[in-house]
Length: 150
Length: 359
Length: 128
Image 1 (cartoon, chains in turn blue, orange, red):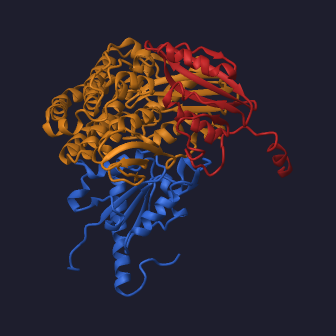
Image 2 (cartoon, rainbow over the protein chains, first blue to last red; image 1 turned 90 degrees about the vertical axis):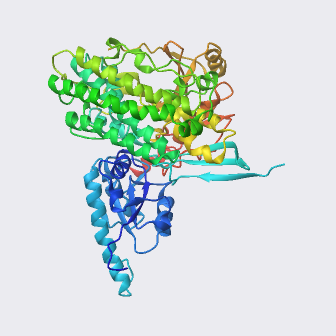
Image 3 (cartoon, chains in turn blue, red, brown; image 1 turned 135 degrees about the vertical axis):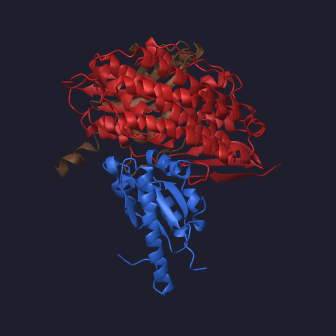
């Protein structure tokens, strides 16, 4: 079945986001933008997911949760950081409880800045993530590890 | 005797877009006690006032929460304007009122959708969010942004909206009304909705008031309390009656929010009819000195912004008490005796906004 | 636009529970307990509202690291505010009904809002 294009499943976690990006992630799934028509499904189970969509920044308490979700996902997997907080900490980067962007705890493949990100940008980001997913799959098929060490 | 077990709920849970963790102490299927542990989204943004100019801080205040964003920005401005005793131009106050009510419409439609999702009523979720896009289009065409509008500033609003545009918003809402009627009808009459919500998570009037419930949670328990009645922005010149239900259960809380959609449309119409001509901002010079509590009605209930200033450009203290934070104790009371399968619905019934609650 | 009156009455710590109890007996709702550090001391303000939206405040002033009594015997829901005050300001609140023991907020910095205590102040000077 390798000749068929794949529909990625997504898992979403809200780091310490203000919700702005999260509701836009949900808006992508609902009738106006409707990415579900491409078979992209928001799953609650990390082991079902191909793309990890994270919003918000890393703080003391959610660091382990984010790592946990990431590590439970099977290879190949792609991380898309949505919104400027997930990319770098954004307006909150100077807060005492914010460590910075998602790349402080997990490897990020796609950065989608914006405050908040618009649904169009999110869809673009996910399409980009699909490309990265295919590359990683190809690497694994060739017997190489999916992740290229930085 | 039945053995007690503790079931962790969250922080990553399919029903909540946001991280909230609850320890549920269970006896078989019954919740004996629920204890929240929070802090997964705590940023500590109140402390940022020490690093940002009090005028620039509006942008941070708006980002306390992306859903209730406009009203957070506005309430912060009201707090600073209260300290400085600024006479804000009336047209700005009316525009703030229109945007506040548009925010309430989008937030309530969002919540109705999430509630439907938590009941497993997927098509109703999709329909609520489809109608919500109409409101987001109105927000985007008047402020330039869908979710975090950036429209408010200390001393007024950032841009005017023409009377023609305001008229077309009202006309658009009139067209939307029959669709909202259809949607609300499902929540009011559908048997499966009634079955999932009726008699669930009951708070008596006394419990709701004494435990500090606010907003739709308080009004669903029979207390007529709506902070818009204190007359901030242009609300003192508009007519409205708070929506009150007496059931105190999840169904009553749903009814309050569903009916408030129409109150909001009516308030927007009144505001557009009465809006005066004139400037929409004033020049603000100098630094604030003093303290002020500003209260306003978020979609989720009363929000309090407290500002203390000492005559420098950085505030001494900014504090925000959000509706979800004070609705937590009533939620814990409402959860006792629930079946595990009903926990997501009851948690959602207070319209939890964790981003707000933890700041 | 109306700006509401917001009287703030300063009271003594030993009177706190009795005064908060009076408000409960009068049928007021506890809106919030807020804390602020002003010139090295903690101002703790208890805000109330009656059924007609009349907004009033009681305020106590305590030094850094002080111990204050819990108001949860009066208002059950006050534990959220009191745990917050403990975790962010480093004040001790005695007799909370639901005491998180410092695990309400897990912050990277302990007591991020706390006023500098006399013990901590010399360390800062050494750094400079």
